[in-house]
Length: 371
Ligand code: G3I
Image (cartoon, rainbow, N blue to C red; front, top):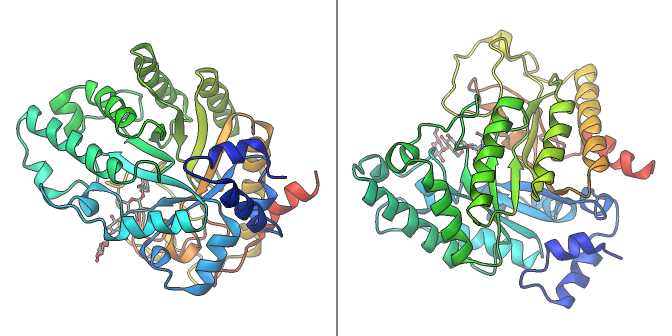
């Protein structure tokens, strides 16, 4: 039997027949079936996946994952390119893909300082920015009300030291834009789960800022269901204690914890860069791209071990965790091939460039088989 947790997560607009179909699809060896008693297993879809251009990728996505997030196509620059013009062609297909495959659908993201349409940067008054933000939430979220299960309402509102990021929203509206965004989101689709999503919020200083931000919402009676810890980490990260502390502290606030953008870079990083600030870029250098042709076994093993350690921790706290989403389907499409140095060959996910499962994949399946 499919467990009640996954059932609840999939309830929105889902009939019993659909649930039976999900259950049928979860048979066999796959990530989503291995972890069906624990949490949802998601992936981020790009345009090629949404348009089902590659049948092998398409079969893999349907077999392995029961949750989907759009990697880019719902960001405001793409979905709302001009003041009065929205482009819903890909987002409609994304949502249809999730519905027809009975997947948990995540909307990413409503309010983010990055990838804004160019017209927003020309807005000078606070009132006009507020109107943009509110119209955007009403139009995008409203279109998929009852279909998208969960939204990243506000994304990356904090600096590394836990203070508010001086984004265009903060500069013009103060931190109340966060409250306004969540309040409106709760009205537009009362059934949707609402998340605050950020990177590095497992680290103590930034976590403290996230806790303060969320407490302020809760104290004002604003609906927030969960927190998304993105999880852009490295095979060398030594952060299990920070992650565990974060799971405990956020869940003690009554929040669901999701790992929303998990990937593990295997490449060197002499600048000690952490996280996912897309403004950070560095020049190309062959020394910084050591696995151009293939990944040595030692690194393949390190990746598998690191994923295994993380999932052991996730399983320990499965009662507090709603979803683990990988940021991409396979290594070839990962954003980490281009960040923070362009044109590198990275290996951060569970499936290789030929869409074959890696040792890391097997390590996560084995974790459940050994139970
Ligand atoms: O689609 C255009 C293409 O037409 C153009 O030729 C090309 C030239 O650079 O750019 C393409 O757009 C790129 C887009 O990804 C699609 O591939 C953008 O330049 C590039 O900046 C964009 O990067 C995305 C990044 O967010 C910035 O929005 C990454 O794919 C995406 O993985 C990443 O995801 C973010 C999450 O949304 C939030 N958390 C951090 C995470 C990683 O940065």
